[in-house]
Amino acid sequence: MFFHPLGKYILLLIAVFRKPEKWNIYRKEIFREMNSIGVGSVGIIAIISVFLGMVTTVQTAFQLVSDLVPRSIIGSIVRDSTILELSPTISAIVLAGKVGSSISSQIGTMRVTEQIDALEIMGINSPGYLILPKIIAAVVMVPLLVIISVGLSVWGGYLAGTLSGAVTAYDYLTGLTSEFVPFTVTVCMVKSVLFAFIITSVAAYQGFYTNGGALEVGISSTRAVVVSCIMILFSDYVVAQLLL
Image 1 (cartoon, helix red, strand yellow):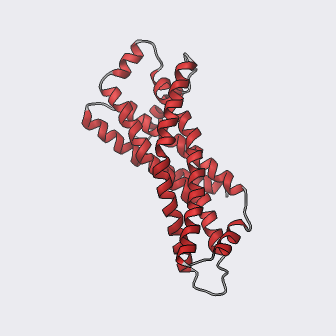
Image 2 (cartoon, rainbow, N blue to C red; image 1 turned 135 degrees about the vertical axis):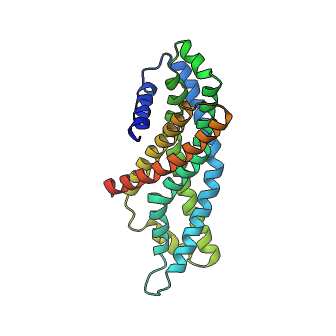
């Protein structure tokens, strides 16, 4: 039961990465998807990231009840937890709901209205034309969104810490800059690229093999979000195990 959908998924990816007929058509689609996936998601990512940093700072300060622990450790904890886990993973889960469901419903609607069949009759590689621009756009834009998320989370933590009095601005910035390990940024970027590929490819797979009508399109969109979230969390563990 597991190997049948896995085989269909792999065969779809092989068709997706087949050499395109005309790069000019694909280039237009890539830029359009970059605008939709990247620019269209900046607002929700920004709001979530700021509050994520604020909550992390307040909860960390609440747990540090000992006077023996320097308050600057709050900045270090917020920085490392944001870069390694919170920004890439939470952003990916949010994008799975926003972008993944949109991709799945879009391709699923094209399938049930026989638009994909029309493309195939005209000799167009429909998986490549419909899915490849989305994957490329996501792999480019999601890491940029994660970088924005990291910056805003750290700023949100600074804002919450200084306004609530949990930590002074000097202590927060000291913790933020002390003992920084650059490799954590590499791990963050690896996660974001992998998550971007999972979100787009899984959603496209669910939409591409939709059968039926409008009800099945909705079911495929829901399934795309659920499967993407599970795969994101599983790959998050695998990457952490391999790289850390």
